[in-house]
Amino acid sequence: MTPTDPSDGPHPQTGGTPFECGLVLLRAVRDYRALSGFLVGIKVPDCRTAHDALLWLMLVRDVAGAEWTSHSLLRLSGEDLLHDLQRALLSPGSERRW
Image (cartoon, rainbow, N blue to C red; front, side):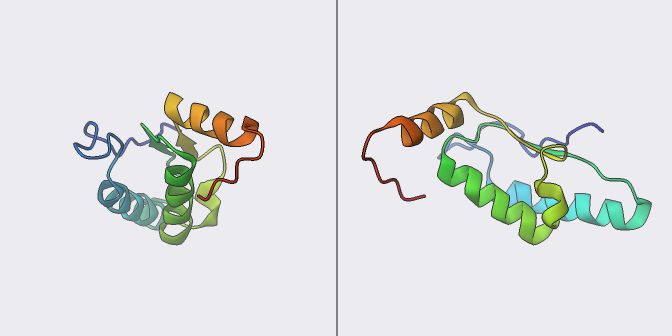
């Protein structure tokens, strides 16, 4: 399985992959499975915050289905995401709203 990458480069305003591109890609991946029976993984590059990760998870679940939220079919990549999660988890007394 080769992950499909929805990005043609960073989004000019957010630096991440635009959700509109992801929506088009997810519909294509869903339709491809319906026609061929093959599952294709999805890679989301430059996912910068935990909030973005949750938005992508919800988009994937709602468009392609819960099956695509597994680690074998969905990859959220981005060093900034790791730092954001570490900050949220390791900051004493911080209540972060995602």
